View (tube, helix red, strand yellow):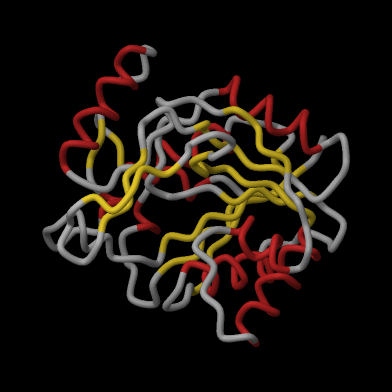
Length: 229
């Protein structure tokens, strides 16, 4: 199976703190974004990669990964959906080609997860995404942060990345969302708004997204456990 990889990386990662965007924080000797790109750079089935960067980003070009001839960059936008749309338009994929969207701050994707996603999406349908069934008890609060009720968790999943769709279908979904004034928080939400029903593929709890310094320490422990530190 041939596919393209799109990565939105134009954000500043304000929740992480500091002046350095979180995708460039060092993790086991490499920038987080390098770890996030690594599984796809190592995969011969990945025909091309496109990373959406902030207009003033001067750091990405200094990374060793940029020597790969399959890698392109574009300027991202204010919202995730804007960056993904820009990267889709610039990645070189045809409308019927498969495209994976992966977070720049998700450095611990395992090869087994990627294989499950590719296998599931190749069966057809509206695409697929890695996700985790919720295991914790869910509480809904009022404005005073006191519990109002307990929410049922059956059939609820936490969305991960990569998420995988036909390039033309995803670009259309993102453009329709923008025209409607909607800001989808992930690509599946945009496809759902068009009536699509992407397949949920069980991912790993170790496929974490680095948001805080504590996440960075956890990600390093995961990579060292796998021998990648």
